Amino acid sequence: MTQDTPEKPAFRLFGRSQGKPLSARQQGLVDHLLPRITLPEAGMIVPKTLLPDCAEQALEIGFGGGEHLVAQATAHPEIGFIGIEPFLNGVAKALTGVDTAGLTNVRLAREDAREILPRFEAGCFDRIYLLFPDPWHKKRHAKRRFVQPETRDQFARLLKPGGRLRIATDVKSYADHCMAELSGDGRFVWQACAAEDWRTPPADHITTRYETKNLGDCAPVFMDFLRD
Image (cartoon, one colour):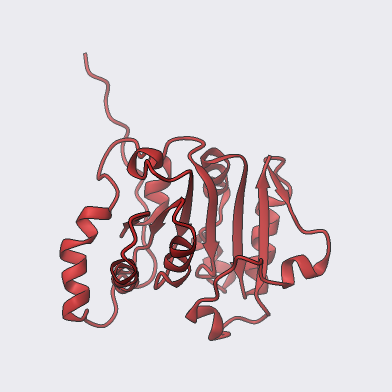
C-alpha cells in the first residue's frame, strides 16, 4: 500500500518574474548551464551530495544579480553555495558570473525559496544569507515579507548548531519586523553587542549594486544570528 504524497503548498509569487529580454549569451546560459547546476526537481535535497568536495555549505535566498554569491564562492572555493532566486534576469546575471569565474562550487535554482526550503535535509547549512529582501513597506503587505514564523522555523531546521543566519536590510520597518520574529526565539542568538555591530558591514560582506542604490529609508542594518 503506497502512502499519499503530501500536497505541495500553494505559494503566490509577488512581484515580477522577468524583466527585459535576455542577451543571447544569457539565454544560452539559462538553456544549457542552468540545467547542469540546478537543484533536483523532486525529493530530498542534500547539499553535501550535490557539492561533495566542499567542507561547508551556504544558502543565499533571493540573490538578485548574484554579485554577493559569486564573489563569496570565488573567495571560498571550499564552501558550497546554493542560491535561490525567482527573477529570471537575476538568475541569468548570476549564471554569467558563475561561467566567467569557472565556479564549480555553486548550484542555482530559479524558484520561490519558500517552496524549496522544506525539501532540504535538516541541519545541512553552515550559513544562510537573506540580503536586502523586498521589504513590502505597506502594513497591509507585511504578510508578503519573506521572514515569517514559517520561514523562521525553516531557518532553525536547516542550520547546523553554531550555524549563522545573516539578514541585511535598508528599511527600518523590515529590520524591526525581523527582530520581532527572531530575537525572542531561543533557537537564535543575536550576535550584536553594540550599535556598531549592526551598523557596520561584517568583514566578509560583499556590497551589491542594489545596496549602493540607497533605495531604503535607513543605512543598511546587518543582523547576524547564531543557531543555538
